Each structure stands twice: as structure tokens, then as C-alpha cells.
Length: 265
Image (cartoon, rainbow, N blue to C red; front, side, top):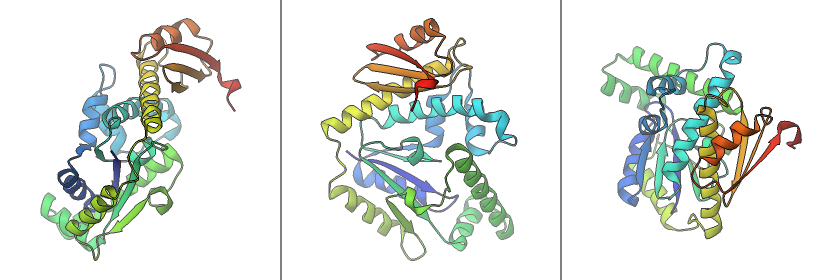
């Protein structure tokens, strides 16, 4: 019942490997576009979410709260998609959005520039120089985004459980290797792990609801849930009635505790 995230650069083969694993293991394959469609709301369009995920902000200081809202929506959508396990997500920073999730296998797929350039030329009908420029620009933006959102280096191998280089490994060999690792066991969710994942899903839904409501959308919160008991922390915790109204309307919430940010830590 594993959950797999695949991190990859543009035309590095990660998408193809994710699709291969989906067929081999019988797992659902979730991509960024699917997540954006699920996360979009009346207030935040698919176009805005997609642009936010593709381009680093030109003025990061002005983007902080918008980032918070977008991440709340994206995380809630992703956790809801993978909470039953048997899922593969290939997209930007999935392993970071799901950090600490039980049963998570974090993959990183890399490939030489020659390999990536050929793929870009074939699929986008670009010259070699234009293909290289496209790949370098996409990698640069993704690296900036990951640094901005999470303060980590996108290529840091310690962020992953397995890094595969396609320089001397074929797609089929990589797929077989990863599938064998999953089939060996050890990634199954225990009852306690499933409960933790359900708690994360509820907390993510609560944070997304707070990020969308007109009376709480300008505030930022940390949310934790355990068996329906939900704790909301933030500088806007004095807006008790609005917070209770929003949180209490989220299915699965049994009890609400509101704490000010000063009590955190």
C-alpha cells in the first residue's frame, strides 16, 4: 500500500517511469495537472495555480501569503488523492508536500543532458540549442521554487530514498528495480500509519477551508488533527467565532481547539 513520489527534471524520464510503475503495480498515477484541477476553487483558478507552480515569484516578499493559500489548496488535494495508498505522484515537490507521510517512497530520477536534450527535441520539435535552453530554464525555476517554498536544494540526495541515473539504466530496468523494492514489502501502512495519514488529510482540509473563507483567508494557521480533535494555531487566533465556524463545517472534525501563535513551540 505504498505511496510513491517521483521528482524529476524536465525530460529526465520520470514521467515515463511513473507511468510504467502505475501499470506494473496497479497504482493510480497522479500528475500535476490532475492535482491543479482538483485544487482549483471559485477564488483560485487552475490558471493561477498552474502559473504559481511553474514560475518562481519575481518578488518573493509580496508572494508569501498567496503562496500559503496555494500550498494549502495543493496539499489538501494531494493528500486526499493518496490517502488510501497505491498511488504515484510525479510533480514538483510532492515529497516535500507529503513530508513525514507513512508508507512514502521518495524517488529522484536524473538523466544526462544529452538524453534530456534528445527527448526535448523529439517532443517539442526544438533545435538542440533551444532544447538545452528550455531545459536549463525549467530546472532553474524549479530549483528557485523549491528553495523559496521549503528552503532546501531540489537536487539534495538526502531528500530522497532512492536516486536513479538513467545514463546507464533503461526505463524498463529502473521500473523493474523500483517495483521490486515496493513488492519486497516494508512500505505497507500499519493501522497506526493509516490513522496518521487520515489525520494529515483532515488537517489539510481544515487549512484549505480556512485559506478560502472570506473571513479567515488573510490569516495563516498551523493545523493538527488527531482522531477528529483539531488544533488550530496562528496569529489570527483571536478570530475565534470565524475559525470555529469554518473548522466546524469540515467533515470529520469532532472538536476544535484554537491557540495563538505565541503558544507554539
